[in-house]
Amino acid sequence: MAAREYDLEIAAIDATLVSIEKVLDLPKLRAAAIDLEAQAGVPDLWDDPENAQKITSRLSRVQSTISRLEGLRRRVEDMPILLELANAESDESALADAGAELDSVKKAISELEVQTLLNGEYDERDALVTIRSEAGGVEAADWAEMLMRMYLRYCERHNLKVDVLETSYAEEAGIKSTTFRVSSPYAYGTLSVEQGTHRLVRISPFDSQSRRHTSFAGVEIVPVVEQSDAIEIDEKEIRVDVYRSSGPGGQGVNTTDSAVRLTHIPTGIVVSCQNERSQIQNKATAMAVLQSRLLERRRQEEQAKINALKGDNSGSWGNQMRTYVLAPYQMVKDLRTDYETGNTSAVLNGEIDEFIEAGIRWRRSS
Image (cartoon, rainbow, N blue to C red):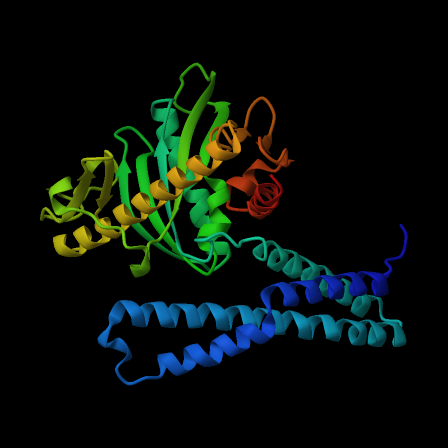
């Protein structure tokens, strides 16, 4: 096995980091942080809660990006020192540790490089993730729940804040649908490449003859709306239904009709929320989700007009985007990027970083 050329590797990641620092404009970020800190420090900030939330959220994201850049810069600058000490002492263990640190820094810089590709209008925002069972009956409901677990585990691994807004359980097993909010800088831009139909092929645990079944679940990702988006919704165009929240197997989780379902009559969009105890709170949360979906609908309509002007007749990449095969062999393959792996258990346990990175790079180049 050839010896690693550490100097060349360090030079390469240093050049990549310099490029990232230029793209993200570190001096501009620092100036923005100072300005936002001043805005966040005014005494009457919270007289306008929505604006205050916007300012503090933006400040948190800018500070997080600065901290990440500065931390990586320190680690890159420390690498030659670690290697020099390890070589001077002829310490194989120390050299191995330095190599592991170099690999870790390379991975972190690669992840940050991907973030620089997230420059869409809504990419910096939080994300609303909805998963629905599609064709396949009980198989599809079970598959939808498996996908929910996969994304929740992904968020857990990355310390992303998740609020489950609604889950509709199927009668026999699995779920009909679920919606949850992921709060993190660039949550929407990162997760938006997961939108589309996910296909599962496996030996069915619900089939007494152990036959192979194919089932489908749909994943929808929309950005969380902000006050500036100005999505106007006429109350007359909304039907409001209230009901009792339910858990697996139809069990009631409270004794009042606090869960809320909103139906936007002009578009047919249906939104439910049952995570809050208060009907008023559930309605407010459901209304925010409805606004996000209407915002995404408007974005898609605008994009369709642009595509029509460009003569773009290609289908949406969001449909039928990934296949998960558990039998007769093990494979997960993205149909857009051709990225694949045989480690299906890791993927279903939330290790989907490579798929997401490949999807972001693919979207940027397509």
